[in-house]
Amino acid sequence: MKIRIMNIEDFKKIYDLWINTEGMGLNTTDDSAMKALGAEGIHKVALVAFESNVGFVK
Image (cartoon, rainbow, N blue to C red; front, side, top):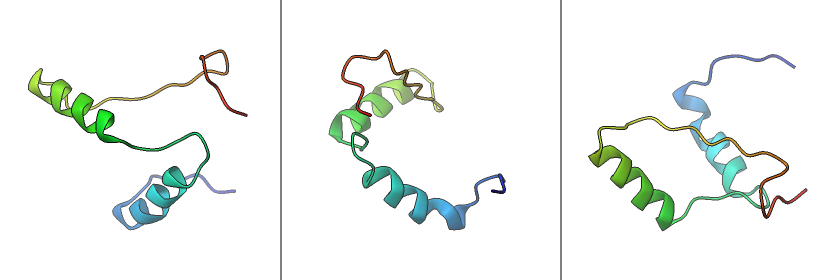
């Protein structure tokens, strides 16, 4: 396995992986959250999920 920096050509494959991974996805709540964060001047966020999170699916 080779780890490298993601580039714009990777976007579609990464998006497809995200959407087709059970328990993961994007929804309108995500859009609303991003708009609210943007209004506060926050333009970059990260999500960290731990196994101990409620609703974690293995």
